[in-house]
Image 1 (cartoon, rainbow over the protein chains, first blue to last red):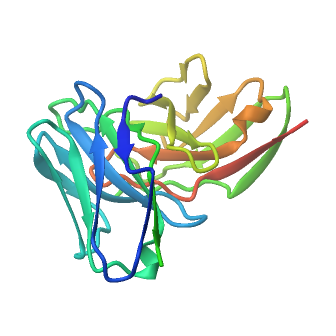
Image 2 (image 1 turned 135 degrees about the vertical axis):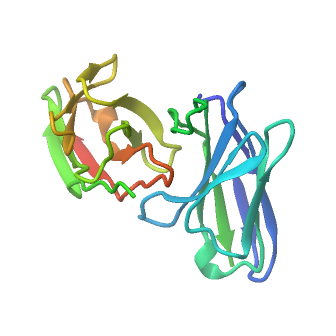
Length: 116
Length: 107
């Protein structure tokens, strides 16, 4: 158990819909990362938040957005869903030093999104 | 952006050492090398990290070349439960996980 929780575990929805994925980081971790993993693909970094502010951005679509709340939990919002958005979505958290370098990431169990 | 290159797949006999290479020739001087693994579709699990010196923990050893252009993760006595995809990455501002190395440990 990494200490990172993600809800829901599974999500089935239809094209065009909007969903919200939730992540609670490990106690004390200020950074939250979101990754997408499509079938048999590697982990694609989407976005990182540090203490409520966006710190780094990867290949995140404009239809996707995220935020980190004052209690440090994070939500990933996916809208206008397409079949190709079906994937595993992982959240990770870390304690990053002030220098800005990344710390060890601890991953949650993921949310499996299926778009029909 | 620092990029990593790993073999697509490797096999290892149970009880033998598994040596997984990673090329990170564009890594900058202050970037750490991190290794993670993912068993089936579970969340990736941290294994080990290092900067310049070789590192060892209860899970594995990490050997980093002097020029820091490559590293090798060593699982000293592989078990069937070590069958997983192993990712090498560097801790730069744009986190990049490649497709990793699929390690198959066989009896």
